[in-house]
Length: 397
Image (cartoon, rainbow, N blue to C red; front, side):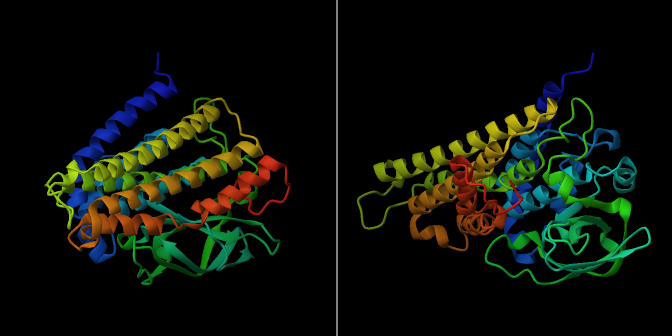
């Protein structure tokens, strides 16, 4: 008798977490280089591939792990604990695998037939894209910013309009070889993600490579039979996927702070020659750890609930979807507040170039400004739902 999906998934999660922890020293060692070179080093990519970290959400029939949202969340957070930029690229690649799993089997075979470690990234925004209907498909042109991981991807999924009707858009899957990448990513944080601009110039995209958003936003996307996580509530799953790198970055900030305070750091202009003995430092570290633990608990709970609903082929009603988006936004605040406390605990030395905390802080502050993670927008959406206000400010709920 085969193992139940949840039991099998727990075993996969344990194995992948073991693999991540084995390569964390490499990720930490390369973190400064990753930022300096503005992209993920080949050694990081190779280590992740060798340890199955690009297969988390790839279908089993192509050699992937076909894991749950909970497994994805824990594993990507653990990658980000070693290097935030590497974790962000892992999030983009693994999340796009989940999107590709919604395509017809023949398209999935095109993508994963050569290797289950095929790397794909996605850019959902269609505002700078243009399409023209052609025989058997579309001709696609445009520019897409924030192409995280584009330098390491074999395929890129691009948001694009499907007609001139407002809201009629979808995802177009294109081989990276048919695109160009423009060097534009010069930022304060997440420098190592290589989030440059992707450019398409009259690229033909066959109809089979087009995934319309309308059916997905209505949660009518492809179902893969009983025992599958691919039928999970569409938008909540994608929104939840964004939080994993932030959880890992916050945990990394705590790791760095505990390690550096363990060296006996003095609090200047006081009698505390070992700040660990100061009540204020103890309280700052304890509060930060509590905030981080709270974020993890909240997001793991929602991941488990989303996974359970997927296995039962159930969706969430609108108020619950609004709550999920709100709680992801709340987790963002928890992570930011935790790192602020840790900066206080380390003092001005936290901003020294040699201190990893300043890079972790910049990465977290940058990543947490992703438009979909905006806590205030999420809170407004949830407040409207609670009060029965029918106005919808976004379809991403």
